[in-house]
Image (cartoon, rainbow, N blue to C red; front, top):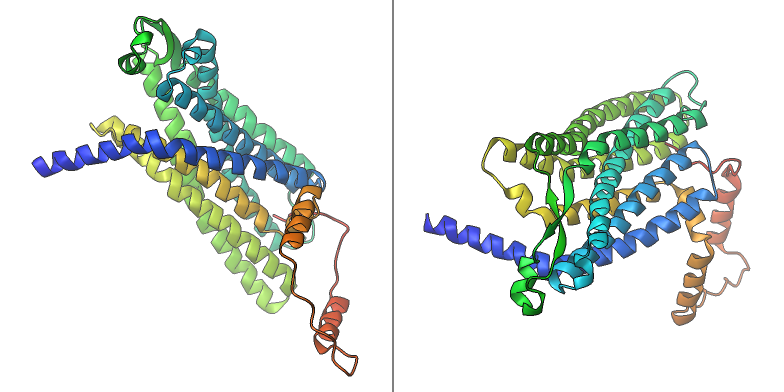
Length: 374
């Protein structure tokens, strides 16, 4: 019994020190790098608009909003809880934090729904590929608009009750800061507090963890099996008659999307299971791991879209053509110049150059569309 108590104390101390020392700088680093990456991605995709890229831009906007909101909430908590700045105890700052909590739920749920929609789009695209009219794009402008509208309308509808889970309340003093700074004793402060309605709290709790974690994870597990089945059918068709290069591209894209889906399941499903267990038992682990789950969610959102954008060569090429990226490349080339090229052979012919020229000549490069093919 004593060993169990000691382990629990050590674990609680670790979580407390992590939240105080390590969590703010790590979130700051991830938020800034993620926000810059998503802004560059949106800029890149905007220069090559099509139905797929419009959906990816929408997904990137959700991830960008997630990073910015995480950055603000972490900054607010650091200034109010760690530095105890009186300005952040005002009613207006507490109201902004209340809004930030709602936005956090909305953008997180939006990002989740985009991943689920991506799996559905990929499945139907593979089904179309194995059909007769495989050259006809399945994901059209109309389907892209409908998917985006359905996602955001669903998120807004589901998050309306979640907004009323917490409220701004007036307290006589901020207890934690008043203990460390005697000047703040008996200074009125405004903080967020849960609503007194237990049924609303339970409803929102189940609504968020079921709709944003458990149910999407189950759907993605099912879609993973269906996508793998479709991929096997396409491989059977490819062995008889098909375009080998096209099928390799679809296989690479499918593997990347499967990696995104598996990553989402690994991160989100355990959180949903812990949340459900906390409602049927005395376990409070889901609350104690709050900072760690926030960090994992932020990290997974960055990794997911990094994988998504790295799966297509046209996106990578367009990204390299951005003015800021080219400027960084020129600066790096100036600081670290490449080695001098090897002199040509005495015969005047370069076998490697001739080989590459033959390959390039025989390759057909289609520049008519800038599709990040799903």
